[in-house]
Image: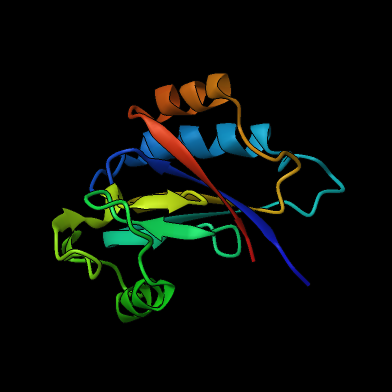
Length: 154
């Protein structure tokens, strides 16, 4: 069986909300994604991480590109990096293998959005494909920080 996952994360990979703000944002995301319905398969997880953790688009990730030379970065390099940091990244600094440029992981060009976060609201099998810009703005207001969404297929 496959799952669709919608993650809502702060725009800043190092930022974490206060608990009351997180609770407000989770309640809103739950309502917006169908998690309040009686006959729903929607599940919501809330995760707090010590270090920025990758939030990727799984099977939706088609390409990782270099922001310096615009080359496609070898998928094996990306997968090995993620596997080696399952507990988070103490730093997002990286040297890309294509041209040797120094950059940060959150600046790589992801075709199939990816992000990094110390706080994540995860919606399993949401009843919507994505949140609208207006809905994201409402979640950001509830959380007290700009947010972005990552859609994954597992």
